[in-house]
Length: 79
Image (cartoon, rainbow, N blue to C red; front, side, top):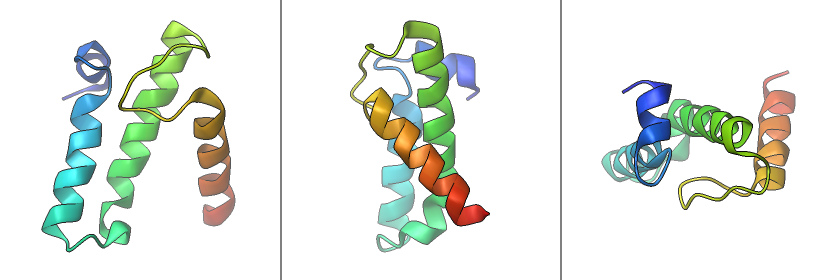
């Protein structure tokens, strides 16, 4: 699915959150094997907040400020 389809899902970004869970289960909860899916979820969540505003909520995404913190952290870790 693409970003528009994932944003339109109920709740928004849910398919990406489920993909992380499936990946973790498949890889004995080794998060490093699923980092690309975490990035994809955060991409969807950023688009969700851009579309709906910082106070919007969805069960699949962290709150806006936490998402910003996580995105900043990931960017620093990758240099």
